[in-house]
Length: 178
Image (tube, rainbow, N blue to C red):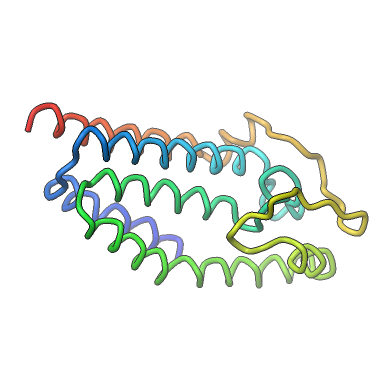
């Protein structure tokens, strides 16, 4: 499923870049969404230690799927920057078709890896829409909290920033030259 998400996303980039009609305003709005998404994804990637411990601190204290929240913000930002209503609609359709099953599969995997702790955590922390206050539990050990650049690099999150920079560079060029 992960391969499908990544490949399908890249397959639409070429038609998107060809048929988008960006303006300075929609590119700016898109950049705001994407910047927020990159911060959320980066914070998440620098906090999580996949399969080693249950992440419940940092962004994971607000939502169980901050990486997917960040991906949503990035995708919506790029779609908005396309300058036509069809792009956000297409993105919402794609996201709605692909990501809920990815979140469910991840929840099942974490339930197997951390059966008791994940059940407690999942009852208190929403799957997608973030809580207003961070989750704290004496029952679930949060593990070593905090962002680590080494973890961020290990999770290769910098690639999302490069991809966003490339797309927005091309959209900005369309605004200026077309």
